[in-house]
Amino acid sequence: MMDKSASGDWTRDAARDPRRVHWMELFFDLVFVAFVGQLAHGIHGDPGWAEFATFVLLFFPAWWAWVNIVSVVNLLPGLSTRGLGVAMVAAMAAASVMAAAAPGAFGERAWAFSLGNAAMRVVLLTLWLYRHRQGSSDKPWRIWIYNGATAVLWFIAALLPLNIAVILWATSIVVEIVMVIVSGRLWPDRGVGGINIEHASERLGLFVIIVLGESIFTVVIQVSDDWGPGAGLVGLLGFLIVSLLGWAFFQYGTGYVPAGLERLQSRSDYIGILQTTLFLPFLLVLGVTAIAGSIATAIHDPFEHLPLGSSISLGGGLVLFYGCNAVVSIRYGKTFRAVMPWTLPTVIIALLLIPVSAAVPAFAILLCAVILLLLVTAYVELQRLRRLLRYRVAGGPDAGVRT
Image (cartoon, rainbow, N blue to C red; front, side, top):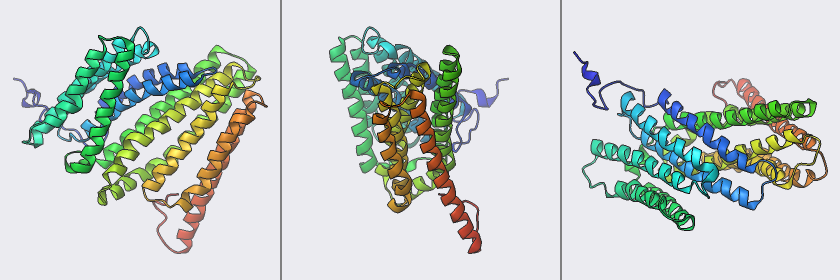
C-alpha cells in the first residue's frame, strides 16, 4: 500500500527544516557555476566597454532569476522536499537553457535566452500561486503581473528581432524590480517581512562559495593550459587573492548577516533587507567574477603588462567587493568609524592598481593585490584580537566577538 506521505500533497510527503538550505537548492545552484563561467569568458583578455556592458546586462537576469527562486522558497516553509525537488529541477532546466544561450544572447541565441527566462518565470509563477493559495484569500493579481505578464513578455521576445527583444527584456525586469520595491513598502507582511533570516543568510553564503569556487576553477584551468613557471607563479598569486576574498567574506561577513537582518527586521526596514539580500550582493559577485577574469588573463601572459580592460577588472572588482561589504556592514548597524579604516585605503589602493599596471608586469600587479589583501586581513585580525583582549580584561564573555 502506498504511504500517505507519497500521496502528492506538497506539504505532507517529507518534512524539511525551513531554516536550513536543502540539498536540492544546492543542486540548483550548480547550474550557476556554468552560467558564471560562460559569462566570465567574455571579459578575459582586454575587454572594452561593450564587453563589460554585455557581461553586466546578461549577468543581472541570471542573478535576478536566482534571487527570485531563493526568495519564494524562503517564504514557503511548508513546501515539502518533493515539492521543492520538482521546483528546483524545473528551475535548473530553465537556467541551463539561459546558461547555454548566454554566449550568443545578443546574437543568434537570443530566442533561447528569452525562452529560458520565460520558463523560469513560469516556475516562479507556480510557486507564488501555491504560496498564495496556502495563506491568502485575496485575488492574486500582483502575482499574475509579477511573473505571469513578464513571462509573456519573455515569450514574445523570443519571436522578435533582437533590438525589440532587448527592450522587452528590460521592461520585464524593471516591472519586477519596481513591484518588489513597492510591495516591500506597502505590503511587507506578505513578503519580505516574513523572511526566514537563517535560511537567507546561509543561502547567500553558499552562493558566494560557488562563485569563489568557479574562480578557483578558472585559475586551475588556465594554469593547466599555460603550463610553466610564470603561469604557476601567477596561478599561486591568483589562488591567494581568491582565498583571501573568501577569508574576508566568511570570517568577517557571514557571521554578522543574521544579526544585521534581525536588526533591519526589528525596525521594519524592509528596503534595507532588499538592498542587502538582493541588490548589493549582485555587485559583490560581479566583482569576484571580474577579478577571476583578470587573473586568467595574467596567467596567459605573466611577464607582460595587463591590458587596460583586465586592470579595470582587477581594481574595479576589488572596489566592488570591499565597497559592497562596507555598505552592507553599515546597513547592518556598524559605524562609519568601524568600517572606514579598512574600506577607504583598500578602495583607494585598488583603484591605483589600474594605472600602475601599465608600468609593471602582470605577475607584479597581482603580487601588489595579494599584499594589499594581506594587509587588510592583518589589520582586521589585529582589531579582533584587541577587542577579544579587551573583553577578557574586562571579564566579559569572549564568545561571539565580531569585528
